[in-house]
Length: 418
Ligand code: ASP
Ligand code: MG
Image 1: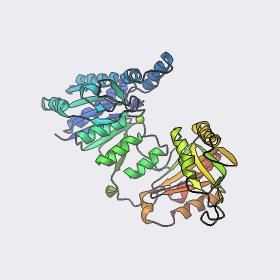
Image 2: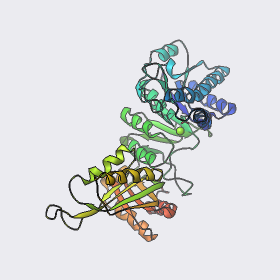
Image 3: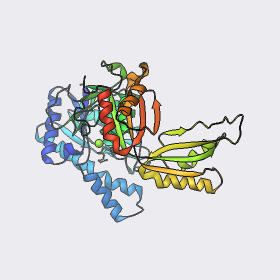
Image 4: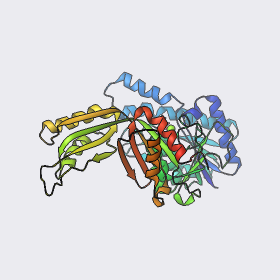
């Protein structure tokens, strides 16, 4: 029997009516001839509540007990969904992570998959079960304790099951009807994409389009799992939503597919650092040790070449999430106090945003950067830092112009048009 994985997020299972709606969608696929593995999240808000209970009980909590508590939200929705399906006459059974078993590493709160043996579920399918409802977000460590995968982890559970069971497709049901060229709350004419490549989705997800957990996309790319993102609140068929798939499956050849804006950025500059071998390592090693996520890095060219002029100086600029500024500052200042680095001044700008244009078409097309910078210039927006990759160009700008920049770029690359 062909097999489908269907994943339902928290808002899709928020109450009993919505669970009934989910069950109806699953039943429709069963009637189309599929065996189905359903992955469910906890009811919306539930995981936050459980995390709050843990933190309210123990400040420096034991991560194993955090997982024991926080994994429970998914157990409830898995059981209820199986019950509702049974009420509708569909042979269904729920599975908690340990029952499958979903084997993970022992990193509690951020566990990774090790293996998902198929035997138990396959045997039940062979005996006539049509739907396995699996609790997302959880697994079991080698020592038998319950683990969780990190917030948003049910997406990754769904992709892992689609890979393990060689599903025809992995449908991710959520409260939006697909992936858009940019945030529709910023640009009203943002367009829903029919297809987007894994690489593009990865860039957009890590830039803050929070529809899919980043790790789920990495996994889908590695195992070539076709992902469809669609709404559980609309009537859908096999062609609704947005398909996240391999580059080869994309017919539309746009240079730019999407624009992302991220407002929680900060820019840090070390003024007048020595220009000599080892300076960058001396700055960024302590930042890494302090757990600071450095994103963009720019080292200015010093006026004089180091080879001919030892003692030349330069400036070093980098960006970090705005809530990590204090930690970054401390790491750098400690390194300076320890004599590992020297600079004249540390300048922090906490009022910046990052805007990026993303598209696999950039690989073969020149002129994207020029077009992007012209669009920003026409709005009189100053660019503070630029960085590029094969399929992305990002700029840091003044935060108050972020919406304006996203709109201008959406227009400049004509993304409202298919
Ligand atoms: N319930 C978990 C969370 O809220 C996992 C998920 O929904 O993906 O993070
Ligand atoms: Mg989610």
